Length: 159
Image 1 (cartoon, rainbow, N blue to C red):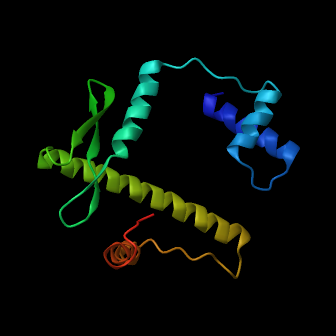
Image 2: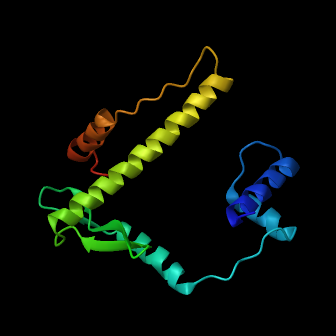
């Protein structure tokens, strides 16, 4: 059993004991530790640093002359010699080819997330929502335009 399979097993055990209503991961954590079902694993500090640095880089935001908030650091994932690498660069210095690849990879991530969301909604509608299906719109143009309008004419804050 993989580590993630073990975690899912703990969650199922937690649901059995605590009911199937929504719970927080923190509640499950407290329960699992109290029962000795989970303990911290040894961590590779280089991996921890990598995760934390990636998160910090992803969150660096700048504002351009037009008042647009944009991400400063971008990532491209590449395989080199059978090893997957995350290469980071600054949007204001990176070559166009790097930025094209980064934007395409991010877009593909959104597409994969949207596909999975559609599969989840379709499953729910087919199995539990007969006659009153949840509607899912995967065209985000209006949503993006609304956020742009809020930024231009509203309070300037984007959630």
